Image (cartoon, rainbow, N blue to C red; front, side, top):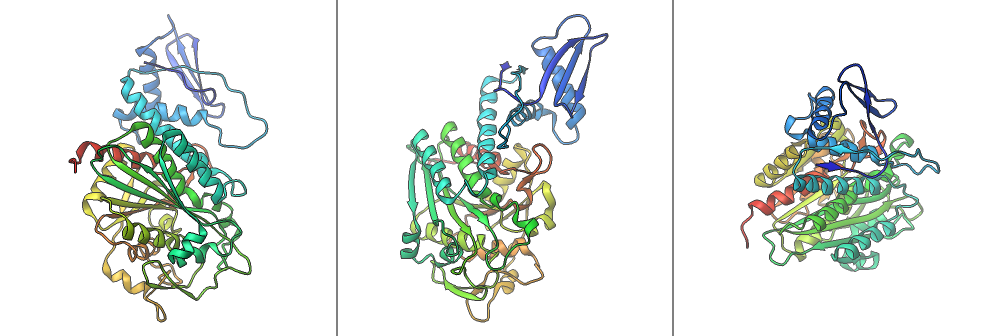
Amino acid sequence: MKIIPKRGGYRLTIKKGSRDTYRIEDSKQKVIIFYKDRKPKGLRLAKTVFSIMRDIDAIYVPKTLYSKHILYGVALADRDFSMKSEKEERKEKELYTNMDRDVVELDRIMIESEIYARSIANTPSNIATPEWMLERAKELANEYRLDLEIIDRSKLSELGMNMFLAVNQGSNKGGYIGILKYIPKSPKAKVVLVGKGLCFDTGGLSMKPPKHMYTMHMDKSGAAVVLGVMKGVAELKPNVEVWGVLALTENSVDANSTHPGSVVRAYNGKTVEIVHTDAEGRLVLGDTVAYLYKNYKFDYLITIATLTGAANIALGRYATALLSNNDELVRRLIRAGEEEEEKLWRLPLYPEYNELIKSSIADIKNIGGWEGEAGTIIGAKFIENFVDGKNWAHLDIAARMIDHEFHRDVARAPNTRTLIRFLLDLNKSSKKK
């Protein structure tokens, strides 16, 4: 099957040579295929491209996924995430593959959904404000006829979401919960995805050092992933009801910023000591999750967040931390990750860890200790205090926030494809209610 992507990216050039061979020029983003007797066509070219993939990625990519990764690589190479005023003009290329048309279309939608999520996560914070993020949600709602509910700062206050507001109060931007709803006629299941959307995170009065603050426009990656998943779901149309929830705010510094040591009452009535204002994502997610559990019913709820730097210490850049109170949900997510070559690793939520977030003046505190003991687990244990059902999972994507391989220093929006695959697999396996 012939695929002609948009302009740009790695050039595939075919030239006459003394023997059948190929050369990869990484620095020039070029692959040259040499032929001796006649120009290769169709499957012959596909086999040559596959052999290139074997040489480059045989260690990492199973043979069954060569075609997908070629398409994925071409799509990513085509995309320039920069905002440079002058960009290199790239020639259109042709890629041949023997993949089934439906398989190619599925992979294309999933890949484009991830690239869309990446572009949102990578947008600088002077542009990508909470209001800008809501505009992206409105665009998706209009394009795909999705329902959109918006809870603004005044409503957050009326509802008593004081943890959320404690994070937002130092910013001159709004705080919002945006709920995008994809609702098929007779859904087999209902899944709620909640994305952390910190459009910029200074750390609040517990301010981050400059080198860690520099990439904090990517702290909205969880919300970007949710938007990417909703785009993919709206195009693929599984028979699963999916809500994409965006928890949007900034964590800024001014005279109104929350003081370390402050105590607030959360939406579910628990009192929370805010020991560290840079442990803010769990505050925003905690109130959002509590609101959803109290007011709606669903089969699964999954939080996605760049929550803890400790995830990088625990797992490094190659795996996403997964924590959950539901073994079946864990199995489904890990299986979906394996299908998309996105690794997830489960960390425990043993009840003993609750001891680390006990506060002397409130019900709980928002960090476990200044030494960072079990930091990723503690972040999830905090959120667990606002979960009201054995149907929750948490993806801490902080360690995989930045692309270190392909588009270096660009937001990755990890596990977008994993979550789409999870929903598609759920569509296949769930019994109709």
